[in-house]
Image 1 (cartoon, rainbow, N blue to C red):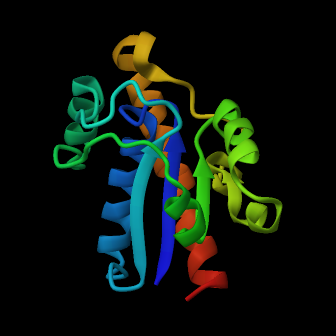
Image 2 (image 1 turned 60 degrees about the vertical axis):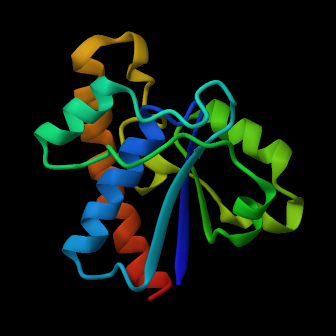
Length: 157
Protein backbone atom coordinates (compact mmCIF):
# COMPACT_ATOMS: atom_id res chain seq x y z
CA UNK A 1 0.00 0.00 0.00
CA UNK A 2 1.38 3.40 -1.04
CA UNK A 3 0.55 6.09 1.52
CA UNK A 4 0.17 9.68 0.34
CA UNK A 5 -0.14 12.57 2.81
CA UNK A 6 -1.03 16.09 1.68
CA UNK A 7 0.17 18.86 3.99
CA UNK A 8 -0.78 22.52 4.20
CA UNK A 9 -0.97 25.02 7.03
CA UNK A 10 -4.41 24.70 8.62
CA UNK A 11 -5.74 21.61 6.80
CA UNK A 12 -9.01 23.35 5.94
CA UNK A 13 -8.59 24.52 2.33
CA UNK A 14 -5.77 23.25 0.14
CA UNK A 15 -4.77 19.90 1.64
CA UNK A 16 -8.35 18.66 2.12
CA UNK A 17 -9.04 19.67 -1.47
CA UNK A 18 -5.97 17.73 -2.60
CA UNK A 19 -7.07 14.74 -0.54
CA UNK A 20 -10.59 14.80 -2.01
CA UNK A 21 -9.50 15.29 -5.61
CA UNK A 22 -6.74 12.68 -5.43
CA UNK A 23 -9.04 10.20 -3.68
CA UNK A 24 -11.61 10.57 -6.48
CA UNK A 25 -8.91 10.10 -9.12
CA UNK A 26 -7.60 6.99 -7.37
CA UNK A 27 -11.15 5.59 -7.16
CA UNK A 28 -11.81 6.40 -10.82
CA UNK A 29 -8.75 4.32 -11.65
CA UNK A 30 -9.79 1.47 -9.29
CA UNK A 31 -6.61 1.86 -7.22
CA UNK A 32 -8.09 2.40 -3.76
CA UNK A 33 -6.73 -1.03 -2.76
CA UNK A 34 -3.18 0.18 -3.56
CA UNK A 35 -3.11 3.85 -2.48
CA UNK A 36 -4.04 5.31 0.91
CA UNK A 37 -4.69 9.06 1.08
CA UNK A 38 -4.87 11.55 3.96
CA UNK A 39 -4.21 15.21 4.71
CA UNK A 40 -2.91 17.19 7.69
CA UNK A 41 -1.87 20.66 8.74
CA UNK A 42 1.31 22.04 10.24
CA UNK A 43 -0.63 24.39 12.54
CA UNK A 44 -3.18 23.53 15.25
CA UNK A 45 -5.77 26.28 14.70
CA UNK A 46 -8.52 24.19 13.09
CA UNK A 47 -8.00 20.69 14.53
CA UNK A 48 -11.28 18.76 14.41
CA UNK A 49 -12.96 21.23 12.06
CA UNK A 50 -14.33 20.32 8.62
CA UNK A 51 -12.85 21.89 5.49
CA UNK A 52 -13.73 25.53 4.85
CA UNK A 53 -17.28 25.79 3.49
CA UNK A 54 -16.01 27.56 0.38
CA UNK A 55 -13.58 24.70 -0.31
CA UNK A 56 -16.40 22.21 0.09
CA UNK A 57 -18.70 24.21 -2.16
CA UNK A 58 -16.13 24.67 -4.94
CA UNK A 59 -15.18 20.99 -4.75
CA UNK A 60 -18.82 19.85 -4.79
CA UNK A 61 -19.43 21.81 -8.00
CA UNK A 62 -16.81 19.58 -9.62
CA UNK A 63 -18.10 16.38 -8.05
CA UNK A 64 -15.72 16.06 -5.08
CA UNK A 65 -17.01 15.44 -1.56
CA UNK A 66 -14.89 16.85 1.27
CA UNK A 67 -17.62 16.78 3.92
CA UNK A 68 -16.32 13.78 5.91
CA UNK A 69 -12.83 15.20 6.38
CA UNK A 70 -11.67 16.81 9.63
CA UNK A 71 -8.55 18.87 10.15
CA UNK A 72 -5.75 17.31 12.09
CA UNK A 73 -2.18 18.16 12.95
CA UNK A 74 0.73 16.23 11.45
CA UNK A 75 2.15 13.62 13.83
CA UNK A 76 5.41 11.70 13.91
CA UNK A 77 3.55 8.53 12.84
CA UNK A 78 2.45 10.35 9.68
CA UNK A 79 6.05 11.08 8.82
CA UNK A 80 7.19 7.53 9.54
CA UNK A 81 4.31 5.72 7.83
CA UNK A 82 3.81 7.84 4.70
CA UNK A 83 5.57 7.11 1.43
CA UNK A 84 4.81 10.57 0.04
CA UNK A 85 4.79 13.74 2.16
CA UNK A 86 3.32 16.28 -0.25
CA UNK A 87 3.72 19.95 0.70
CA UNK A 88 1.14 22.24 -0.85
CA UNK A 89 3.12 25.45 -0.35
CA UNK A 90 6.75 26.51 0.18
CA UNK A 91 6.18 27.37 3.85
CA UNK A 92 4.84 23.84 4.39
CA UNK A 93 7.95 22.38 2.78
CA UNK A 94 10.11 24.55 5.03
CA UNK A 95 8.21 23.36 8.11
CA UNK A 96 8.50 19.74 7.01
CA UNK A 97 12.25 20.00 6.53
CA UNK A 98 12.45 20.89 10.23
CA UNK A 99 10.21 17.96 11.25
CA UNK A 100 11.35 15.16 8.97
CA UNK A 101 14.61 13.40 9.90
CA UNK A 102 17.30 13.57 7.21
CA UNK A 103 17.06 9.86 6.26
CA UNK A 104 13.33 10.29 5.47
CA UNK A 105 13.54 13.53 3.47
CA UNK A 106 13.34 11.63 0.18
CA UNK A 107 9.61 11.32 0.99
CA UNK A 108 9.19 15.11 0.69
CA UNK A 109 7.81 16.68 -2.47
CA UNK A 110 6.15 19.93 -3.35
CA UNK A 111 2.74 19.07 -4.84
CA UNK A 112 3.06 21.15 -7.98
CA UNK A 113 6.28 19.33 -8.90
CA UNK A 114 3.87 16.70 -10.26
CA UNK A 115 1.93 19.18 -12.39
CA UNK A 116 1.59 18.33 -16.00
CA UNK A 117 1.46 22.04 -16.86
CA UNK A 118 3.86 23.43 -14.25
CA UNK A 119 3.96 27.20 -14.33
CA UNK A 120 3.63 27.62 -10.55
CA UNK A 121 5.46 26.16 -7.59
CA UNK A 122 2.71 26.66 -4.97
CA UNK A 123 -1.02 26.25 -4.64
CA UNK A 124 -1.94 29.73 -3.37
CA UNK A 125 -4.00 29.96 -0.20
CA UNK A 126 -7.57 30.71 -1.33
CA UNK A 127 -8.74 31.61 2.19
CA UNK A 128 -8.63 35.38 1.54
CA UNK A 129 -9.13 35.38 -2.23
CA UNK A 130 -12.85 34.74 -2.65
CA UNK A 131 -14.38 32.16 -4.98
CA UNK A 132 -11.80 32.73 -7.74
CA UNK A 133 -9.06 31.58 -5.35
CA UNK A 134 -10.86 28.32 -4.65
CA UNK A 135 -11.37 27.69 -8.36
CA UNK A 136 -7.69 28.31 -9.07
CA UNK A 137 -6.69 26.01 -6.21
CA UNK A 138 -8.92 23.27 -7.67
CA UNK A 139 -7.46 23.74 -11.15
CA UNK A 140 -3.92 23.38 -9.81
CA UNK A 141 -4.83 20.44 -7.56
CA UNK A 142 -6.55 18.55 -10.37
CA UNK A 143 -3.53 18.99 -12.63
CA UNK A 144 -0.98 17.96 -9.99
CA UNK A 145 -3.13 15.01 -8.91
CA UNK A 146 -3.00 13.55 -12.41
CA UNK A 147 0.76 13.92 -12.47
CA UNK A 148 1.15 12.42 -9.00
CA UNK A 149 -0.98 9.42 -9.89
CA UNK A 150 1.01 8.89 -13.09
CA UNK A 151 4.25 9.06 -11.06
CA UNK A 152 2.98 6.55 -8.47
CA UNK A 153 1.76 4.17 -11.15
CA UNK A 154 5.12 4.36 -12.92
CA UNK A 155 7.36 4.01 -9.84
CA UNK A 156 5.40 2.23 -7.08
CA UNK A 157 2.67 0.02 -8.55
